[in-house]
Amino acid sequence: MKRITERDRILTVAERWDAQYSMLASGDTARQISERLHKLNLKKVKASTVNKVIGNDSWTRVMCEECEKDVGQAVVLYGSWPDTAIEICESCLNLAKRVIQGKVQ
Image (tube, rainbow, N blue to C red):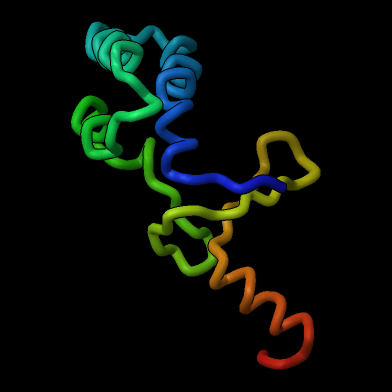
């Protein structure tokens, strides 16, 4: 289990992009995006700038998989199978706690 934020997504965006697109016979576009991402100061750049480079916000946003809302941070819960994880926001975690305690159904 670990906490993830939008900044965490931004800090790892170039690595994750390369990991996804290096396996493919990627064209110039994927390579050009990679080069642009690597030129950014990922410690300071805004998500909106990264989103413009890539063309969407799916690489920077943090979304709760329970309520399906974009959130500033979430907890990643890892499953027992490789590459299985779910991201849950604080509100949904609090609700889950109340469900376990029998306070709500």
